[in-house]
Image (tube, rainbow, N blue to C red):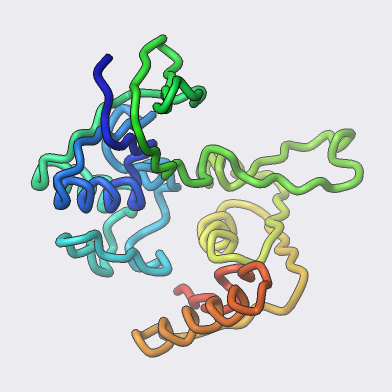
Length: 236
């Protein structure tokens, strides 16, 4: 029975980083990715999100991230991921949708939706959260007659043309949606607290944000939202 020393599930930034170091250390492994092409969750982001708008994408090991530009993030980052996979000859198999992991003696059996199985001694779960978004419960949501859309399913501004839209949430994605919805429809923005705006976000501010997150975690508290430590970027 053939087995790997490790199986990595997911070929996003965490999965590619893990695969790079496993390869560097000579660990025989395979990366199983549910997508049909490189890019992870980035390929599903909305078209108006550009590299100017993202909070910042960390470099991959031996692979510098795309810089700020007007290029769409759902094009720039997947292109970078694809080049990185090829450049380092990472053993990515796709599309593979993992459905379960079971124990078989001293090994783990990783099962896919199409009936295949990979045996391994260790497992790296790098699936992320994009495909399992948190949808909060609001009283009355089940009887509301209007359309309700999560960021995960945002169809673009044209879909909402001429409709009345409420954008709920104080994160960066809300600001980006407002920027493209306001010219085509009536928009109300609902947040729990007053937004904190910033005009720049340099390396020093980035270190401050990381420190704030670390302090909460070290104190045994869950990390707060990204925006709570970075602020919101002003858009034209």
